[in-house]
Length: 345
Image (cartoon, rainbow, N blue to C red; front, side, top):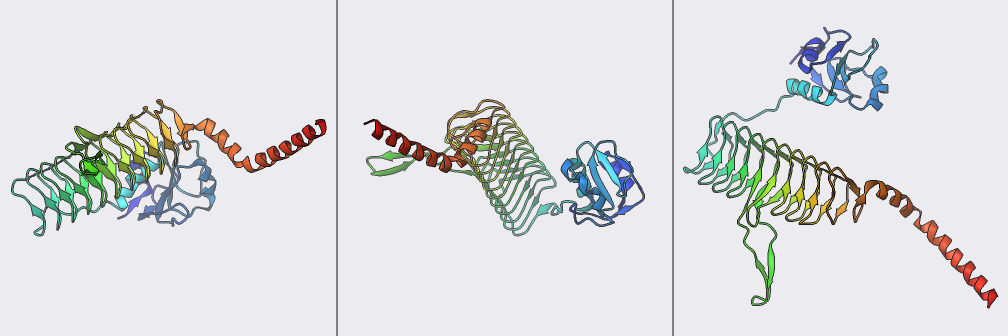
């Protein structure tokens, strides 16, 4: 694949600054890009590196750019523009449509046009696979599960019975949709825990993406729900009856307990733990490793364990670092006070 800088500027909707005739053959990281490669800068702090960059072209934020030794493409959003260019030079390679001879597709399943079902995938009775969806090797789709159009389901994913996946959803390897919720009650007759039935489903709305090894438990009754456009990183646990709003960002190793309700556009850092049956308001941000034990208002920023408003947590963390010094001062003051009281006695 070869494209001129001028062609790439037109593709990305950017403004060319420099020579449009330079031929680009690939993409590369900023510090490694060569004369026939294109790269990008989105962090303005890295703009100072431009004089040392050897790339054939660099995608940069819009601004008043003087002539440069490097060809520039100025755009509103360098990350989005670079993604468009990436699709040109390194497009996603998808399997051809069709059902592999080693796949197991029940005669009672409904398979849309242009679907690709790869080796050792299993599609059970009553399941529906929408048009142009791809099931990679080893995917399991349970009875009466429904997957919409243009989805990509990678190897090892299990979508269990009755669960619903809407359109353009991407699910990465070894994620499990619809495992039983963690529901048990002590039974004196058994002298042990009795498993409580989990008869609901999981529903995932349009344009969501789930990373590898995510677990989304089915509801006890009703549905566990992930809203449109939400993105979930690897190793996240979503418990039964959780509701997640639209365009949420949830980073790796987050655990969300049962029946928690997360609003639209929430952002949750890595390793956050959220207790069940609470509300996280629209636009809230939760700092990494926070322990969320109560409701969080809309647009609030919380950090720490137990979590408190982020500004307060910053002040508290400064004090925490000084605790050994403060403890020593308190000990010295107590000794001096005891000595003074001894003299008075």
